[in-house]
Image 1 (cartoon, rainbow, N blue to C red):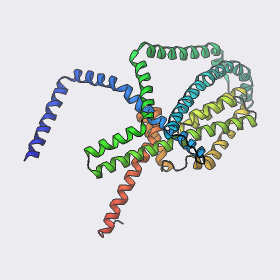
Image 2: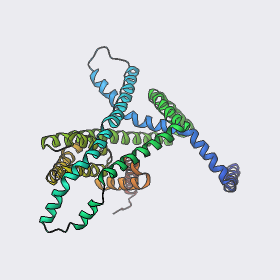
Image 3: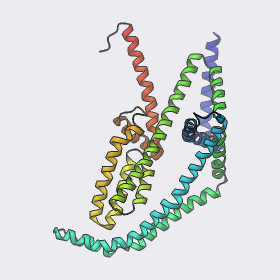
Image 4: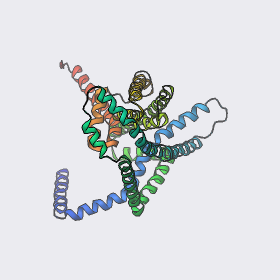
Length: 377
């Protein structure tokens, strides 16, 4: 009787809150906006901590192996602090490499491409004419095209866009404070990881029974394991692929070996799509030099990617996420459609967790039916 009254009260309260929200929709949306602005630094910090925990754990394992045979081992807290510092240093180095080497090199390549195109277009037109291809429309198009101004406008446009974004970010105190506070929160979460983990367990078991608490902890561990394995494997795989592309391009004396290798390492973080982007960029850059080199670039890139996929990827990443290629491709497509680039990257381990939970539940149900003597096939 008491439970029925309590349930009726909750339903009535819910209906009243819903009616108030519908009649004061603008006030509710502004309230949620204020709450989101207030919670944004915390969300950013937790996401950063979750991602950075992967390299931190990797450094901890590395130090554990290096100090395993030593008589006087350093304290776990010291190893943990050093791992956090090294992780932050690596992140800063990657950002510096991107902004100091890769982006300026892309700008220089775009500028030098103008002269290469001017030199090579007559040769390409002559080759097309030798195969009796009508090049009249192409010549008319090139006659009215100012490559230098086109590239200059593109670079100026990109610069203005970046400048406006940077200006908007710097002019908005909330964005700066959210980013800074988010990084600080991430560092504090990483440094207090074990303490927060124990506190979270206490809260879970305090407000739920043991069975539900065990289930929540199991699913949380499954999510952490799936994402850590995927992120660590994908990062290592992308670095190896970038190095292999650089070595192969250097051996075959193809241009832009360093640039394409760096772009490949960055793009390879995006499953499936990233390799196509970097391959297409390499072919276009080599095409500006000569069609022959573009063909060699395509063959070399596909050969290196085949070797990496068949012999390196299974050992580095392998079945770390426990998904077949079909489910992996579906995860990339659905994630990209819903959340863009971030969805492509983070939907694979998410689908892996869902797949594992559904598989376990299916096997459990089939086992119960088998014990009850119910035929399933």
